[in-house]
Structures are given as structure tokens and as C-alpha cells.
Image (cartoon, rainbow, N blue to C red; front, side):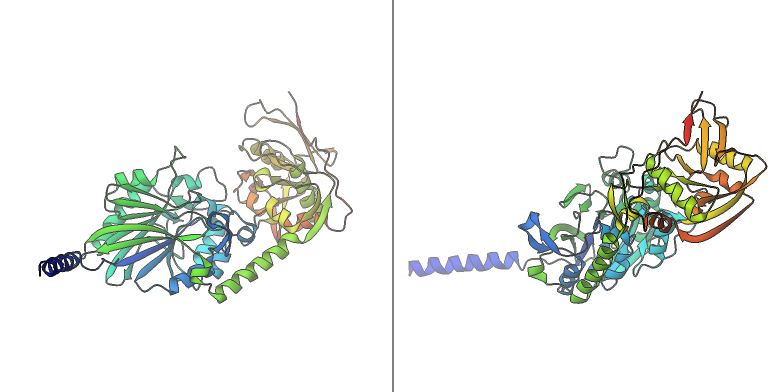
Length: 498
């Protein structure tokens, strides 16, 4: 009897403990977050996970279709710049391959400005889901296709979402057009207040602020200290392989890692009074063996990659030795590119800015991909009819543009780099003859230069201009086509004198 009594007491205690603990609390809402995809949008063997097939948009979609709890899917930016497949489409692949995924909002980072604001603005306008840009305006307005903030219903709860881009994103960059990035802290305070007034029960920030490695940029941690009321900061643009978290006060800062081998999972817990009581993070590895792969998305991705490979590998010609660029002086690459423009345009001269030439050309066979690397922009060749005096002044003005030296063809310029601004150019010849102040010359430039986007804005003082709508890269390709091997230019077009 004594043994039975002891056993009864033990069972009773166990039952009471079980009742006291109750069932494990489940999350009310999930946030799923991707960022820094960097153009790696397909499933592949991942060394970090024993070369198991992981990651990609097709696996992500299959993972999401298996969810039973309410969720919101968000994307933080930096989605294309590290692979040819991403770069050749200028990031447009995401608008196609991710169109059927249930993203609620997106952000961009400084790396997504690789091709300038006009290119990015086009992607924003045509995105299948909105960008949330709380401190970004273009021409004084929120860009087309973007919203300053969102409130998304997830199950029974209202989740407020806003996005901040670092003011450093547009610093020292060209091709920014009418882009303005407002003060991050001011924008955050205003938007958090608005979201709370609109009934948001949790506030989530998509952040492309600076990392701790950048002393000039505002960090997520400092923003969390300065702006109360943000529950979760979903951070992008760190470029790190592994996921990271940080707690600042009541704010959880989450970075999901790069290259889409996993997805950041943030669980939000609300009590019966609809108060947020807990936030938990998990880095979910997207194993294809566990979640499968959406075939429609996988086929779209395969098609995009086939197209990119075809573009990348197509030979367009050969050069006899490597052509290297230089932002601060005449270069062999710049001379060659200017020659290509002048030859195609049948012009008296050509000028192209060094900053547009983004990579060197290797010796030997040149592919279409090499040309995309050299000139990744969709700039068009433009004819100018310009008087000699105005042309000389444009060359003079260009010498004051930092890190964007004018690369020329058909011209020889003697100049003194130590002279005061406005008097550095000493003597100019065009095709061997002295430049005549009153004579009108036909000069080839890019429409980007004519618009002043490269800093060489004095070319606007031309008598007449005509945009050919032929891309610069086309002229570069034709410059190589049908030749045994293109020789390197001899140089000496800019001569330093005292």
C-alpha cells in the first residue's frame, strides 16, 4: 500500500506540473526577411552546409507555401550586384523571378544604385510589390511605385513597416538625378509616430543604414537608441555570410546573412491585450531536401541564367594587350573607348568621362560580358555641334572634376595641372590643326555627359545636339568586330606643360 501511495503522489505531482506549464506558447506572427541576395538567386551546393543544395527563390517559395501561421515576407535590398546573372539584368531579374512570391515590401541599398537613380527608379516603378521609402524622395515626392510606410494585417495584428536608406548611399555617386535622402533619425521619429497613430501593434524597420565599419554612417544600433518605438530592425547591406542579432533596449536588430542560403525568421508574440510580449529570431537554412523547390520559379531562374550565360560568353573580338583605365589621368582604356565613339559617329572628336569605364579589358578574346563590365550603363551616343571656344572651355571645366578625367579622341591638349582653375588648358589641336575658336566642330559625347551627370556639364554650351539612341556599348562592340586583334592606343593626348 505504501508503494502504491508514493506512486499515486508522484503521478499527481507530475500532472500538476504539466498543467502549470501548459502547452508551449506559439508565435502570433512570423516575419520572414531576405537581404543581400547579391545576385545569387538559385539553389546551389553550399560549402557551409556540407555542400547540401540550399537557397534560392524557388526553395524560398516552397518553404513559404508550407507555413501555417500568419506571416509577412520582406526584402532588404542589395539584390544583384555580385554576380553576372544579376548585374546583366541590372537587377530586373528580381521583378520577374520573385513576382509570384508573397513579398509585402522592399528596400534598396547603395549597391542597388550601381547604374544610377534613373535605372533604379524604373525598377521601383515596375516592381510587383512596393518599395517602402520613408526618407527617400525624387523631385520632392515619394518615387513612383514606392510608399512612405505600410500597415499590413497579419492574422489578427497590424504590423507597421517603414524603410530607411543611409544618407551615405548617394554621397560621392554620380547619376543621382533628383534623388534626395533625408535625415534618417528625423524621418524615423515622424514615421514611427504616424504608424502608432494608425494603429500599428508592432513597428518594423527595413534598414539600409551603415555598418559599424563605416564611421561616417548612422548605424542601426544608434538609431535604436535615438528613436523609441521600433520593435524590430531588419538590417541589410552588411555583406556578411552568417546571420547576426543585437538587442538595443527593447529593439531587436536582425541581419539574416547574405546570398539567400537561408531566410531570417522573426517570431512575434502578442498577449490577450494585443501587446507585443516577446520577439525571437531563427536563421532558417533553406535546404532543398527539406522544403522542395517551386518548379515555375526554378524554370524562370534557369531561363534568366541561360540568357545571361549566352550574353556573357559570346566573343566579340580580340585586343593585343590589356587596356587599363584611370580615373585621374589619360588611360589606354579611355583612349580606346573615345576612339570607338569617334569612329562610330564619324565625328571630328569624341570625349567620354573616365568614371563611366568601370573595369579594365583583359588581353586576348573579349566577350560581351567583358563589355558589360567596362561600360555597364545604358548611355547613348550624342552628336554635338560646338564652336571651338566652347569646346576648349568644356575641356577646361572638365579638369576641375575630381576622379573623372576626360578621355579624348581626335584632340591633343597641352595643360598645366598646377595652374588656377579656368586657365589650365594652354593649347589644343584637333586632328593636327590648331583649334579655331569660331569654327564649328562635330563632337561625340554621351547623353549622360551632356546632361551634366558626369560633372562635365560645360558641353551644354553647344549650338545643336542630337541623341542617336545608340548605346555606347554598341560602339565598343563594333570597334572590336571583324578584326584580327585591336592594337592598344599610343596615348599622349593630354600633355602636361608648365
